[in-house]
Image (cartoon, rainbow, N blue to C red):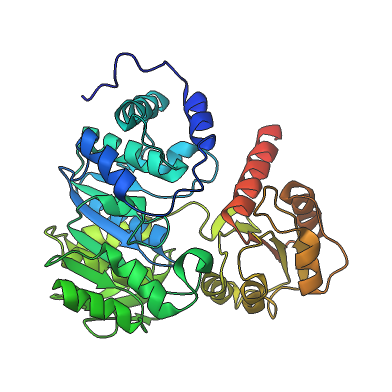
Length: 417
């Protein structure tokens, strides 16, 4: 077991999170130099596990969850690093499906603090190093690293990974990554490694991804070209990468991400039985992704046009009116994100999100053509629930922050029952 420095102050997890939230180095530009320096001191530039880095605009978390579920069903130990969290910071690290204990996080944060010296780190960089420290300690067979932002300069890219996954490319975080899919594709392709296998799940990928793969000699497989999938009623089939399967169960997570995960597994050193794949697909879940909290209440973290279009496709076909509680960040394309839901939703409950990035509910109300906005999810949700008839549905979406508020509200209601 790796121990933190003896002189490190004894802090609770809440204390450490306050330290992370107090980090203020906005003036420092994106880059991996700081991460490389501290990770090198901690011996974290490579891990004793098979590392798969997962980037893309949408579908990173669900692809990780599908890979995790299938690998665990096949008897492999798996660590997952993802972000952001919804209610508990420990959600960002899963080891065999469990969150590490608070003390384990405290030890990891103390180790990072002792190793960084006078090197300034961001909140995400500090947390990423702590996660890598936990994975090095636990030594699972596989570590899945979900990219936070972009890829080339993201903190997770400090690790020399064994495989890479690019899910989809869409316009998001344009202030950081650019407003062109080719530029964004180049940033996402920064996780590719020379001679290592990689998978791209985007059916219409920007040319910059293939160009970067060719430059590096990366063995990159594309959806629709090197592997294919198709839904057939209540099941689906997959073919490619030396794998051909039919009659697979449709998972509760996006099918295109399940196909991307299967292609990734086919290119890995792990050979899973059909039973393990089937079990993994059936059991794959991820909090906040079309998660059902009650018979007529769902939440989804859809927060950009592409993810909202997928949410709309899942909501189609049901009977009865849809009530939507929506809160968004003002740096998102709000109008384009709302657009796919407009033909489906009969009753809107726009809410304000707090913090400097939160959009005011009145802005959403203006775009939706409704008279009332709500101060918070906890104010709007009881109104929507009361107005929702037995055969109707309530969906809460628009941001991780929106869903987190809904989950907290629902847990509080459950505690009262």
